[in-house]
Length: 258
Image 1 (cartoon, one colour):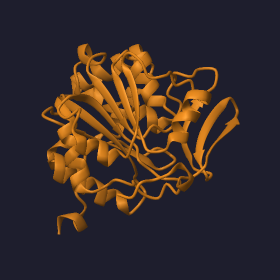
Image 2: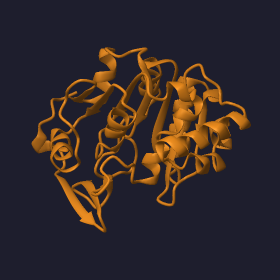
Image 3: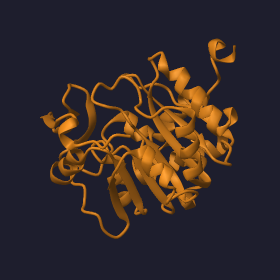
């Protein structure tokens, strides 16, 4: 891959509206957001749903194990995992300007005990394999400034993501469920993880659909899911009971089955 310079990357800008600060990459598309009065709150609905892999994991483990974000956005998930859950957290972000803006305008702490942000290409960082088999919670949100499709989205990439996970680990991927590329992306995830290890949540009104894939852990039964969702609501302030209404296994479309 040719070396990228910051001048080759889109300009990072911010906007404030109705108490919410948003991050943009040289476009109107929102790459992340923060409520200024509550900087640790997960403001965007799809970002809240990126925590859905906790439903597959016992509540006693929710504050344990390494969390990784591929794509920093406005650092909402990185801050939440590090400061709210108190878990060791690493993020990988290609654009050094995004990291600077997150530190200055979005309350992202400096690297230190339990927090590290790598300015690197996510695919190259994965290939290095330094965290292989160690990650309990993986967030993948890799869109460029045009926000048309994930910039890393092939079967090999998702296989590397699976190798990153520890036994019992889970991955959440942000996809656009109303785009034609959604089924192709899900099929690639299923090829890497196994079709019986991939689930989807309902699309948000903006069209974001969070897909969850797990390594070696099945979806709990209905009663246990309700219990875990209630606990997430009560202890983490996330509307997990609503997630259950649209949660279902991913099934290939007729086109994918042919």
